[in-house]
Image (tube, rainbow, N blue to C red; front, side):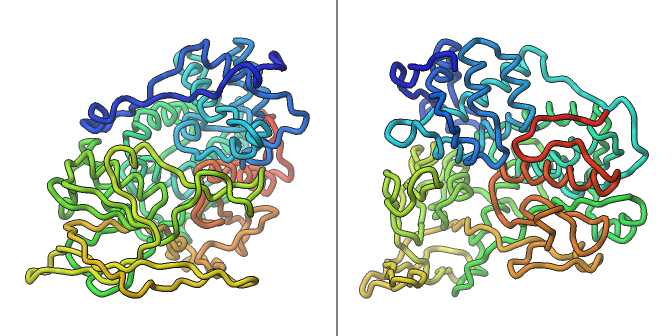
Length: 488
């Protein structure tokens, strides 16, 4: 590495945020860019550790020490080439990934880890600014046609890789524009949508065809798609939301988080709203669920002008330090405080919602909770127990359910006769991503269940290799951790 003592000389730095009072007035991204000197020093902190465990932490197998070193040496175009060799969309992961690579960083054993995600984001943004990221259409075509159903990160990665192999790729998306939850789930203040659009322009220039507003399984039968294409890749995601089946769950004001977030993203984009408007303005909002989606609801509610925003989590508050039973380099379940949490939300842990309370007109006006504790029994899963005498009523006009997803929709699977697993995901082999129906593959959340964007991209790349091999008998598309070696 270029600076073997860098980790001893420089402290960790990451991008700072615009002040809360400024950033909550709009839906723009609010990170403050680091200067090149700071980025050079952050690249220098990479340790030349011999065995880079960051590779094992990254689902894509990104060549992290290599691009860190290139940044330290000021070789930004080389850094971009290294980064893009394993990651189709670092502008997405550099903004949205929780960075499991940093939790696996060797330096993180006893110091602050290398700021890998920040470096990644700055590499790709520099590359776009300098004009280094351009379309790479294949020189020739194989004559094979592939349908990709779903245009989230998994579908986009699948499509780009297969297009690079020379196949004719058509992406089907039921929403108005491509992007999946990147567009209609992730708030604009975390990633503005022009970030998606500039990449889509490149994909279109490379020859990928996008058909939006087409719901496969309804507008076009899955069997028709199978007849028209040589292979199908299902990347529709795990979109079935988890409910909270308690008294009052049908009251007006009890809303699924993704309905709230997707409507707001369409509003910001100027898309005409369908159905009743869901806004947090002048309301007491309670977000039930402590993950990233809950955090997104908090930030959005605050920007709406909510009177108050509270966040309920049924799990106990985690420690800021790595738990003893989750040693390095494994992903630790530590307390994570997002930028949205810092904008004015109050968080409550070990709390369970028992009942939604309505008025005479069927509107939500409050909810009833109780405190809970988790009883640990050796060899068994922890048991949830209510704490007697802790019932409390809360004022609430809007309850947002950010409880995750239970699996994928089954319309296409039913039409094609696909096997499903116990969690309502499409069964597809770990070895080749193929379902029980020849020529039909699955990748991303629709195959593995609800997961991270970085896993979705990784799944798309892996699936593309196996689809290419199915169509051609062999494939030069890279697998995890391999650099791109296109056939043509």
